[in-house]
Amino acid sequence: MESALALWISHADDLSYDGVQIEFLPPNTTSLIQPMDQGIIHAFKALYTRNTLQHLVEAMDSDQDFSLKAYWRKYTIASCLQNIQRAIQEMRTETVARGGAQPYRMLS
Image 1 (cartoon, rainbow, N blue to C red):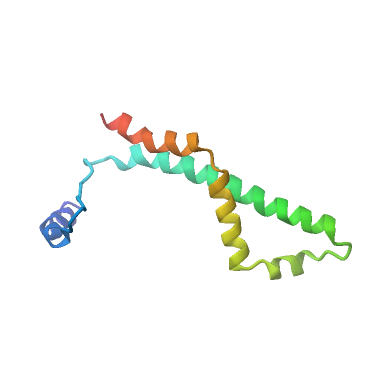
Image 2 (cartoon, rainbow, N blue to C red):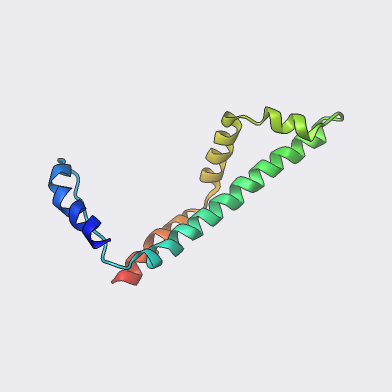
């Protein structure tokens, strides 16, 4: 692992761009950062699942001849992207802010 880091550092000069600064995290910080990611991912997945199931229930209520198989066949990438957009819009700012601030408090 250290040799991979040394190789990366030796090539870091090749990656210099105006307005971009490369920073390396201290060793063993993954376990501190992952809980932040997990909280945001958990909130997103809950909102996405709720939106998907809510749309499913609405489709069931509005169609007397509802077919679950037909519903999922009509579920497209566009439908998925709309649910993703809704989930992101519904995500509370506090959830993202709390997750984003956590590693900096732990590392300082």
